[in-house]
Length: 164
Image (cartoon, rainbow, N blue to C red):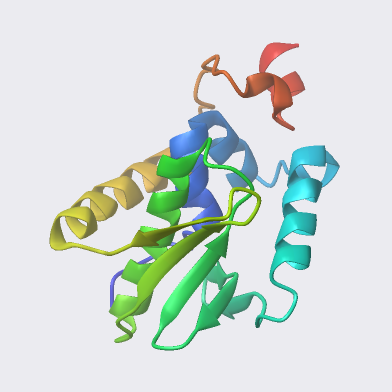
């Protein structure tokens, strides 16, 4: 079994969105409970898929819901962070594969009425292993990554820790 080092889907997502946020949250500095964007995402998830089985926790991953034939679903409010969403889903598929479960992934964007299919390929699996190693380095470091200004910083719940 691959050593996951307590890596969660959120850590994979944060790796692509903001390495500083990844480091801060790994040190238990959680700001998202005060975020309107996070609250809106939860409402969209709850209202859009109320009849589906919700949040299945397997080890360190939380899958939003499953459908027949091992189809893993993740719900997101917009495609602004699509790369992060894709890699988060790839990690879920990789994690499940390591447990002997072959699955496909679907990222649901209910507001946009879009679905994106995600398939774990050997190339993506190889890249994911590198990403996991980089995440391990970031979260085990005593040095916070420097702040990088990004278009979405002003809406981030960690904004004041980076720019004030």
